[in-house]
Image (cartoon, rainbow, N blue to C red):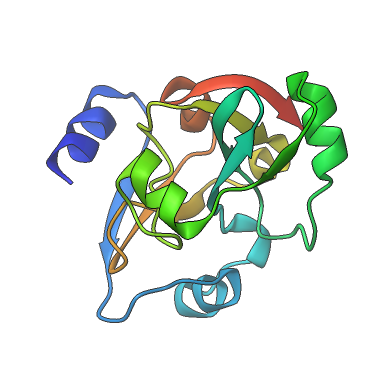
Length: 148
């Protein structure tokens, strides 16, 4: 987590690393624990495509993902969620705690996150959550496309 802190400290954005005793693994758990709207939760999902792996940072408001649209945006034939084993191999983190910034993967970003002053997502450790200004997600990731 030291490398995450270094990345965050170099940015000009406000953030907070919040420690909690129990892992927060769902958008509902995060919303209830932090007293925030579900849309402020920002899970980092790993996509497997015919062009490689991507990280998808999405608002917790989304109940389903349109993989066909994502494939069109990325110019891919097929897009699906990576398996837990693939997520671990590609990111070094377990599903549910993939960090929101600093992954060495191209990023697809849900711009509905910009509706909020702060969003909450993974740090790579299940008992820490990153609270950060959503604009930082563009600076601190390799964003290749956005969607709304």
